[in-house]
Amino acid sequence: MPRLIALFCLLFAVPVHADAPQNFAAAKKIAWRLYAERPSTFYCGCAYNGKQVDLASCGYKVRKQPRRAQRLEWEHVVPAWVIGHQRQCWQHGGRQNCTRNDPLFKAAEADLHNLVPSIGEVNGDRSNYALGMLGDKPQQYGACPMVVNFKQKTAMPPEPARGASARIYLYMADHYQLRLSKLDRRTYEAWHRQYPISEWERWRNQKVGCVMGHGNPYIGTIDQGRCPALRRAGDTRRTSG
Image (cartoon, rainbow, N blue to C red):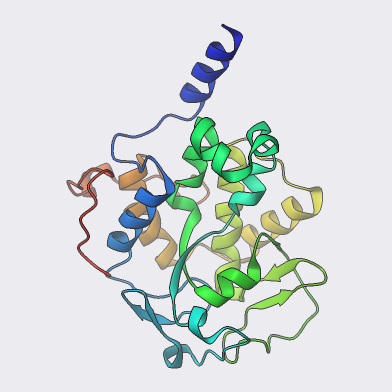
């Protein structure tokens, strides 16, 4: 009985909107549709068409993985590893166990507010590292000023992505009761103040919020009247990509 009560508490702790994706696979299918009118990668600003990234469009230079660099991937700004390692389910079977048996992790993993289009190589290099400030000069990826320090296990996003990244981290920490280190919280709160909310963020918040049923409060509320009649998350048909 206690386990059943705990399950119900988790289910009602994070309300799920009818159109919100029920899992990560469904979230990715919806993401293709949401970003179709503005197909540009989050950190580097590369254009993409379907799963193919146009590296020349942003002056991106491959660091090590040419095939993955040309592939568009959907990145969790707050890595699934970070979310999972704060859940008991991860200690007993890792991500697969959490996806199957932890409703809160499953909701967080599928939260579209935390998903962004990313160059595959950048997504792989960033791995599960925290985002933060580094003294390194941005030279790993050509004209894309993303920096990944493998020794410090930290990634520093380009300035145009710092405010958006911070607001995503702060939203996820609040919405899913995730613990942030004192340094990380100070960094993200500073970025939130330093980098104003962009027009792109407001556009994205409206698009994503219509599906999730709520906006990111660090950006603002959504206008429900502007939400189109979207297909359910379970509909696997794609209109773009």
